[in-house]
Image (cartoon, rainbow, N blue to C red; front, side, top):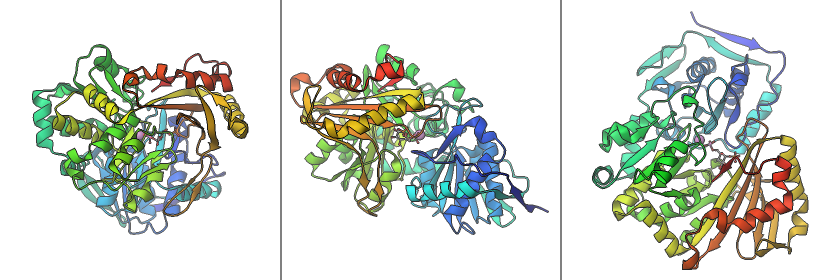
Length: 545
Ligand code: VG1
Ligand code: CO
C-alpha cells in the first residue's frame, strides 16, 4: 500500500530564484538531496488548487530527465493532482508542452530543461514552469515560488513505484491518473493545421536540398515525423536526430559558434539550399541558406512580411511584438502593413498578455526565437516550416528572399556579442559603469552620431499595467542606431555580458555589407567607452551572432 511521506530538511534552499526562463543550475546541484523536490513542492504550493487539476510533465531528454519526471509524479500524487500527462519517454519540447497545456486545459506544465545550455552529468539541468495559458510563468508567479522556497523546509511525496514511461498507457496511482501519451502526434497535427504540407513536400523534394540539425536534443523525433514521414525527405536530411542525455557533447545552442558543423555545410561548403537547427528544448531556431546566414531579427521581419503566404495566417495578423534588444526590422514591416508593433523586455513571458488579448499574432526575439499565437512559446520547428512555406510559394533561394526584403524595406544591420562566463565582479563593474553614466551620455557624440536617449529600460505591460524595471541599458543615437547592454539571466557560470548593436540603412548601395563592418563604429565606440576587452581580458567575444 503506497503511503505519503513527509520529508523534513534542515535549511531551506535560498538560491532557487528563476531567471529569464526557469531555474537553471548545474546537473550536479540538481542531483543533490532534496534540491529538485523542494523546488517542485514550491511550484505546487504556489500554483494554488492543484488538487484534481491536470498537469503536463516532460523534458528535453538531458541527463536526469526520466528520474526527475518520476520524482515529480510522486510529489504530484501526494498533492492529489488529478491527471498527469507525460509524453512517451518523457520527451517534450517546450512549444509542444505549451500546446498540450492548452489542449488539455491543464493548470500548467513542468518542462525539465536548461534549454540551450549544455547537458550531461557535467552540464546544466533546469525546470521551466508554464501556466494555464501555455506560456512561461509570469514574474508574479516566479516571485511567489522563489519566496516560498526561502522558507520551505519540507515536502511530501507518494512512496510508490512509477511505471515505465517508455510506452503509451494509462495508470491509476492513488488519487491521480497518469497518462503516458504519444508526444509527437498532436504537435505535428497542429503544424499541419497551419502549413500546407503538400506544397512544402513537393517543393523540398524536387527543387531543393535541405538539412536539419536537431543537435542530439528534443526536436529529433518531431523532425523525423515532419521531414521524413510527412514531407517525404530521406533520413539523410537530418543531423544529430537522436536525443542523447549529454547531447553527444554538443552545446545545443543553434548559433554560428555552437552549430558549427551545420554552418560549415551551408556557408563554406555550400552543400544545401536550406539548413536549420533547433536548441535543446526545441523553442529556438537558426535559418541558413546556401552561403547565407539569416539573422533572427531579420527572420522575424521576413516572417511578418509574408504571413499571407501561410494558410494559418491568411486572414491577416493583428499585430507584432519584439523584445527590446531585437532589431527594429520588424517595426519597418509593421509600419508598411499598418499594424501595431510592441516592444517588450527580453523573455517570452512578456508576450503572454499581448497574445492572450489578441493584440499580436506574431512575435520574436533576437536570440533565435520566433513564434505566434498558435502556442505561447517560441517555436523552432514552426519557424523552419514557415521559412519553407515562404520559399515554396515564392520559389526562390534564401539569399534572394533576404536580399529582396532588404531592397524593399531597408536593412537593420544587427549583431550581438556575448562574453560568456566571465567573472561576475567584472560583469557587474562594466554594467554599473555604464548605468551610472547614462545621464551624462545624453547629448554626447558616439560613433557617427549623437546620443539622444540613454536609459535603463523599464516596461509597463499594456494589459495588466505591471511594471518590470532594469531590463537592459540602452543608448539610442540621433540616426536611429542603438547599442544595448544586458547581463544574461540564463547562464550558470559566472556572468554573461550581452552587447547588441543596430544600425538602419536604406540606400540600395549599402545593403550587402558584412554586419561587423557596417556596425564597426558602434562596436569600437562601446569598447572605447567601457574598456570591455581590457576588463574581460578577451580580445573577441565568445559568440558573435
Ligand atoms: C536568453 C535570451 C532570451 C531568451 C532566453 C530563454 O536569455 O537572450 O531572449 O528568451 O534566453 O531562451 P538571457 O537572459 O540569457 O539573455 V531559452 O531557449 O534558453 O528558454
Ligand atoms: Co530553448
